[in-house]
Length: 201
Image (cartoon, rainbow, N blue to C red; front, top):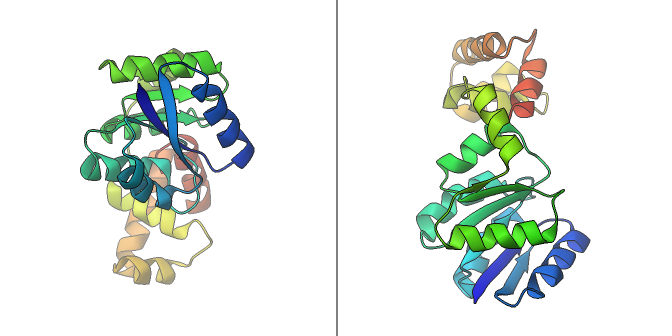
C-alpha cells in the first residue's frame, strides 16, 4: 500500500482528489493540507510515501516545499500536480528532486498511474511539458536577479528592494537592468511578468 499526502489549496479539489485516489486499491490518502508552510509538519506526522504537491500555494510555494522536503524527508517521493505547466517550473522542480510533474487536466487514473510509476523508481513528466521545457532552454536569470525581481513585484522602490536585500541601490539597478535585458522587456514590471510566465520566478 502506497500512502499519500495531498497538498492543494482549493478545498473542493483537494477533497475530491483525495476521495478518488482513495478508491484505488493500492493507494491510501493519509493526510491533506492546503498551505505550503504546513507540509513539513504533515509529512513528519503521517510519514507518507508520496506527496502530491501543487505549485501555487499560500504560505510557501510548492517548489520551495519540494526543496525543503529533499532535505527534511529524503525518502519521501514528490509529485507536482499543477495547472501551471511552465517549462521553468519543471526545471526548478527537477532540480529540487521532484520525481513526477503532471498537469491537473488529466484523468485521475493517470495520476494514480504516475504515483505507481514514481514509487517504482521512474521519473514521470507530462510529455508536452517536457518538450516545451527543452525548447525553452535554461533559466537565464541569476539567483540574485530573481531575488531582485521578486522583491520589486509589489511595486517596491529601488530603495525598498535595496533595504530588503541588503544591497546598494546601484547594485539593485544593475540587477534589474540585467534581468530586463535577459527577458527582452522594457522595464522591471514587464521583466518580472515575463520571468514568472516562463517559470523563472
